[in-house]
Length: 181
Image (tube, helix red, strand yellow):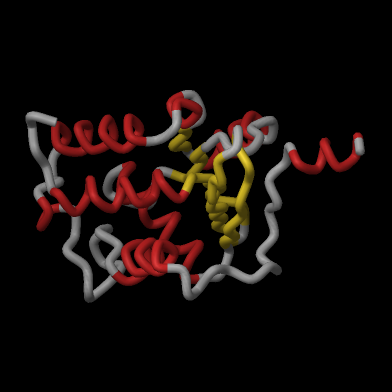
């Protein structure tokens, strides 16, 4: 039983399990982050951030505040946009994060803004099949968690977000910039 408990406290970080392709929430998340990713130049089908009113520092600051505010409290202390040299340290820090807590460690350079980097990291994980979906029992509630990973020559991103967070993020981005929120 002790070994099962230890295993239950860790996220499964491989991509060899099936994913819920027929699930409506999964389809909505996949469609948005893969086919409608708002990062410029990633999808011909998308309205990019600027078309949705997200352009400029005040708008992206507002977007970050709303996205982090809509996630679990764990993401506030485990959100790490990084330069390449800082990635290994941040990956070590989040090793202790256990289900159902969330974290985002991702390379922030190479994209125009941090939000572009974050959304590209999720998009690339879907595009390259480096994602997993797991369900956990959290105080009697079933919580679906998505694991995303980007690797090209080195590990560039590792992100764990609850399904509810991803769905909220879609609505926030699509709703556009509103300075009153």
